[in-house]
Amino acid sequence: MSNDSAAVSYGPMRWLSVRALTGRYPASAALVGLIFGPAVVMAYLGRGWLALAYIVAGNAISLGEVLLFGYDWTTPTYLSFAVFNLIGAVHGYVTAQESDRTSYPFYGRWYGLLALFVGAPFVVIMLVKGFVYQPFTIPTNSMAPTLRSKDYVIASKFAYGYGPYSFVFDIGPKVPLFRADPQLGDIVIFRVPDGSGNDYVKRVVGLAGDRVQMKAGRLYVNGSMASRKETGKVTIENVDFIVYKERLPSGRSYSIMEISDLEGGDETAELTVPEGMVFVIGDNRDQSNDSRYTAVGYVPGDNVFARVDIAYAHEDNHWRLAE
Image (cartoon, rainbow, N blue to C red; front, side, top):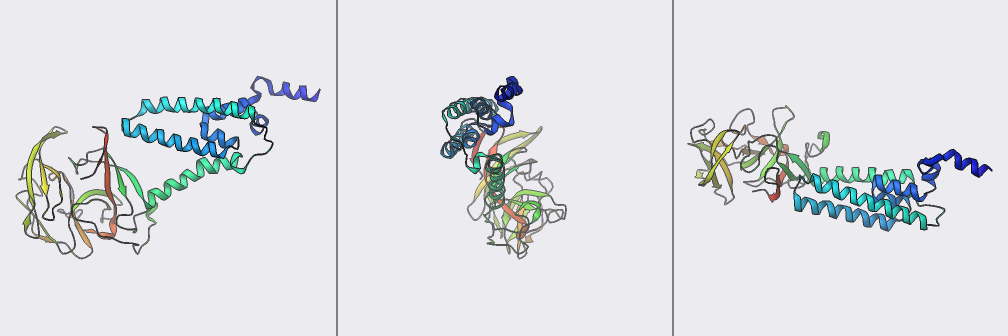
C-alpha cells in the first residue's frame, strides 16, 4: 500500500523527482542526455569510457565544423547539437534500462559531474589561455589589411615567456620567466606603456639598438629602406588605400596599406630604440597610433605578452596563418 502511495505522489512527472534522478530511471537518464548531452549522461550512469568517447567525438565534430564552416557556423552547430543530444537521450534511456548497477562511481554523482564538466573545463581553459594560446578580437583597422576590425586571432602566450601582463588580472611575474625577444616583423600584443591599461596589436619593426625612420612614407631600418611593391587597392570605411607588399631588410615580408606618402607619420626623425624596448608600427600606416607618436612611443619588452600566430577573418570566413 505504501508503494502505491509513493507512486501516486510522483504523479505523471515522477521521472523528474530527486528519487528518480538518483535512482537513474531510464526516463530520467533520457532527460539528462537530452539536456546535457551523451557525455554527461554516460558519466551519470557510471560509464566512464563511453563518456570519454563522447567527449572526444563532440570535440572532433566541433573542430570539423570550424574547419568546414569557419567561426560563423551557427546553423551547423545547432543541428549537430540537437542530433548529438538526441543520441544522448536514446543511449541514456537504453543504458539505464539495461543497467543492474546499485552503486555509482564518484563522477556519476552530482558533485562529480559538476567537477568533471564545469570545474575541469574552466581550469583547462584558464591554463591554456594563461600559458599556451589565447583568442583575441581586433578592435580597429590599424593593422589592416593584415588584420581588420572584428577579426579573430589566436596568439601564442609562450612565444616571449611570461611577464607582468601574461595572465588574467595582470598577476604575471614581475620578473619575467623564460623571456625571449620578439623578431623583426612579428605581430605582437602588448600593454600600452601610458598607464591606461589598454592592449594594442602592432608589428615590430625595430629592436633594441635599431635605428628606425619614416621618410616620405617609406620605412628605414638601420639606414636601409624596406622595399615595397604595389599589389592592389582597397576601400575600407569609405577611404581608399593603396596596398603594398613590404619587405624588411631582414627579409620578412607582409602587406601594408597607405592613403598616400604625405600623411601624418610619414616623416619622422631617425629614432634609436633604447635597450629593453621595441619599436612597433601598424600595417595601416596612415591610421595607426604606434611608436611614431609619443602617445605610445617605445614599448618595453616586458609589456609584450603574446604573438599573433593565427588570424581568423570574419569577413572571408577562414583560418590563416598571420603574416
